[in-house]
Image 1 (cartoon, rainbow, N blue to C red):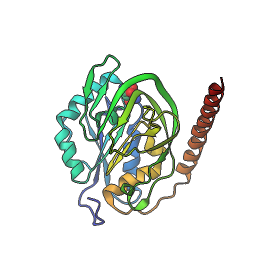
Image 2: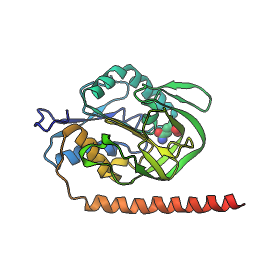
Image 3: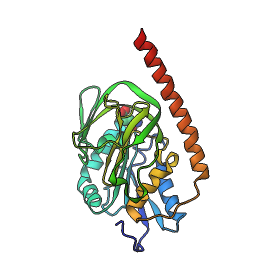
Length: 264
Ligand code: GLN
């Protein structure tokens, strides 16, 4: 799909089960992808897949957002039923962006606080267990240097907002989205955040993540459309700078507090 030939149809940005996986405004990710494509003269459309409907294999981007445990259970059922379509689309060149509950569900399983096991779709080798305390607040992530980023290269530090109890552990051969500079991230003690594979990003970052980090949005678009002309990003970069300041000062405060506690 990422050839530079003109496309014969609009880029289909799929927002999956927004009624269930939309608690944290993750719809904004789909809006940003559509708009950044259109600003470049690339036809794009937002395709909403309503809760319970089969997920087609014809989309270019599959966006799974965050949601609390009950809606997450309902979403998991539909995702498992459409697992073959999602896998086929991904093999054919589509991108998967999965946030928080969605991130957990592209893994093998989510083990809730009562030890009940919610099966995911196993697109990526990872699993999540509910933990305590809940990780809430600003996050800053230094993305992993990796060839999968493509021609645009590794994006600069990402900012987001997290709100989850899950502790996610990546399989031994799986690459994280990045290292945590501030906040909790995957929360399993590894100091990493999210997952990064060819045309797959899983992350705990809300915000939503793509309006806050347009460099990440453009890498996702480029995975689908090939080379992209640059856009003026003055406003977006001032938002990024503001959020980076907020996140890093939180990181610095935490570093200072931990140091004081360690001293006793
Ligand atoms: N239920 C999951 C957790 O708390 C996901 C939460 C979310 O999507 N914000 O870990």
